[in-house]
Length: 121
Length: 74
Image (cartoon, rainbow over all chains, first blue to last red; front, top):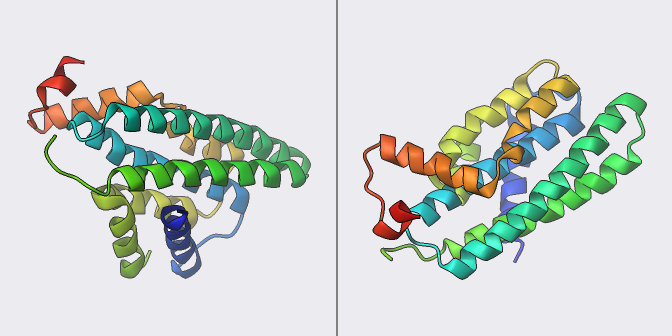
């Protein structure tokens, strides 16, 4: 169920860990930006899938809802990140980051699940 | 950014990973990243679902790809 999210996070971890010249300052901000960029990439693929006519109305409704939940979690994470950057208090950021990871994972799981079978409508 | 990591990303995300890989590399290789820069990088999250659809339609049309009648009409 969480294969896609785990695979994606593992991939991102690999990139972060083994990429040469990797900077480790502001890790929270970099992780937040990485999450947003990764979800946008996944959604670009989904939107293409939908525009080409492969997605069913039910699938679109579910992804739309999940995307909204992700956006709400991301806004919370941004606020928590800004507060963390200002005050150094990491607790709210950690909670928000966990929420964002959960929303991202659910969204990416749906995208993988619905795009498994591709073909003409 | 290793070749294996890029291949894995492509396997998970498809061709969009080719656009994503350099973006992620830019995030992690930058010497310092201010909160303002982080928030700027988070701009894609502001995109509404419908804005994403319009964006993709525009890109596909620019590539000369013909959309199915149901997608083109809505």
